[in-house]
Amino acid sequence: MPYDGVSRFRRFARAVTMEVGALDTSFLGRGRPLGAARVLNAIGMGRTDVAEIRDYLGLDSGLMSRMLRSLEEEGLVRTRSHPDDARRRVAILTKAGQREFQAYEELSNARAAALLDRSPRSDELLDAMDMVASALGRDRIAIEEADPRNDAARYCLGEYYSELGRRFEKGFDVSRSRDPDAAELVRPRGAFLLAMSDGLPIGCVGLKGSGGEVAEIKRLWICPAARGFGIAKRLMHAVESVARALSVKTLRLDTNSALPEALKLYRTSGWVEIDRFNEDPYPDHFFEKHL
Image (tube, rainbow, N blue to C red; front, side, top):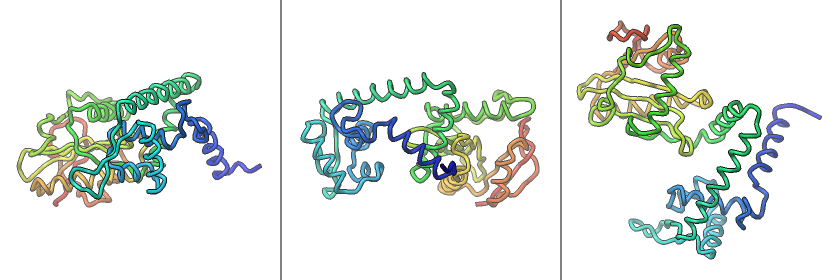
């Protein structure tokens, strides 16, 4: 029997199909298949535009209509015309639908916790899951502007600082770094961008501005499991677009030799190495780009 890449992938796909109950006619014992449960979940998680839900789940219009009709007949969902566009439809959960959504959430959380509890290497398993999710969902990763003080942003920054602490020879102490104030990372001075994968943050970058024509790129970070999929380039393109919209003419950034992938990105995307422009003790390479 072959043990090549295709065979291993197919074994993985069969295992996931069994674990998530994709073939069950009553997903998690709630009386409906996985597809209908996913539609209910998408609405419960805040997606109300029917076309958006269909695209998010990769469903054709006929199947989406049948699933919505089934959920409506159960009294779990109501659909109506969009208030701003009669050609579009929106879906909302009824009170019964909200209770069913919550029941699915509790069962799904318990199932995930049980799988992790019985795994002898749960951290490694989660890392592998993160990599698979990033690979399969790479075309659906969204770049969003966010408050640098919100939970998702703080998570990314915390992971970024921890990684620098591991990779820098003498560690990293954010109190010694020229860490930008949050006010410098929000409009009209700057911005903070997140890369979001199905609701979870997997990357970030900041634009530190003063209201003038020169600004700095700060805190570019990508989750290790999501590296290699072009997310850093997307974040850099997005933050440059924001800088142009804020009338920034020149961008600067600094980095460290311990981050060779960052150096490669900047050197191959139009950045020019310049002399030191700050007194931060950590960077040893400095770049500039004219917009």
